[in-house]
Amino acid sequence: MSIEWVPQFCETVRLEGCEGNPATSEAAGLVAGLAAPGGGPDPKMVAAETVNMQDYLGRVDPELRAFVQPLAEYEQRFSPLDAAVVAAYREGYLAAAEPPTGSPTIERHIIDGEGAGETVAIYVINAGKGTARPAILHLHAGGFIIGAPQIDFARLQRMAAELDTVIVSVNYRLAPETQWQGSLGDNYSSLRWLYRNAASLGADPERIAVMGDSAGGGHAALLALVARDRGEVPLIFQCLVYPMIDDRTVLKSYPPYLGVVGWSPEANRFGWSAFLGAEAGAATVPPAVPARWADLAGLPPTWIGVGSLDLFVDENLEYAQRLVLSGVATELVLVPGAFHGFDEVARNARVDLDIVRNFEANKLRALRKALYPEGQPPIIQDR
Image (cartoon, rainbow, N blue to C red):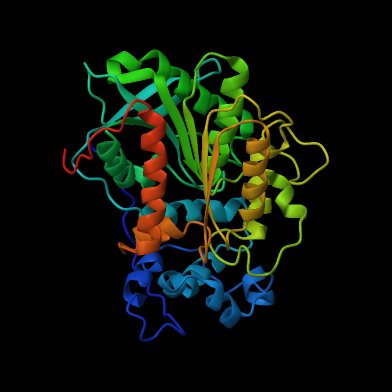
């Protein structure tokens, strides 16, 4: 299949305070060439106004420090967020993605959505008729407002090959154009399609996991709750990578070193409000916030990974605790000195870091154990 990619742009960003760091040139790759809607730093930006950057850098893992300033400069260009800025943010986010490789295969399908006349685009990675391998439904990151399956193609291809699994990535509709009912319908329709068409994809309908990063983790957590209650599709596992699962985080006061880069409190408020169609943190919101669901019992075994400097660290720790107390087998991985999206930042800059490699290995180990309960498959290097 052919895939059209947004062309790279050609803007240069000067990195102050990072001279002499061997990772600087790679870190520049994160922001060099990303389109942005002009203007300087927003004086309301939390990181710029309240954070002592020297203190913050001292808390960041040494492997990640070179990324902090370019990432902060890039994010400030999209602050404050509003509907007009979102389009440019989406373009830049897609442009930074690692291109896919030739193998495993990526197939595009258009399937029926939940509503009359609605359709959903999905991408099936590593399909293979005549087999019965486990499957993963993947939901991309982007704060509910940006992102697309293409940003993860290369990473998902590697994962599909290593785990010998089928992966379906969903092009769910984004806010603010579409609110939670639309994206949930897209995701559930895709899960149901995967379950019903497992045989033709070479997948085992009894070994399906859901996985997502950031907002995709929030989508995955919500989908697991809905699938549990509808009882149509059994799930074997949920893999939640620094998931965005509680809108009430906008009401809390945290140390200023949380949410400095990667995803800010301001962006969090905008993303949640756009997704819910209601003010984030309000006393009453739609049933689209996983952390607000009272009953977590009966969910599939869960893996949650988050950095200690992530804005979502508190909500992720609390959700993990609630899962444990609800009788759900849960593993929590807390990465010291890591900000939100640290692994994606390194991948986009084409840098191989121990902190990312270890995080990814932990996630793959948990997935392999869940997807192959009778024994792990051999590691496949090339397909």
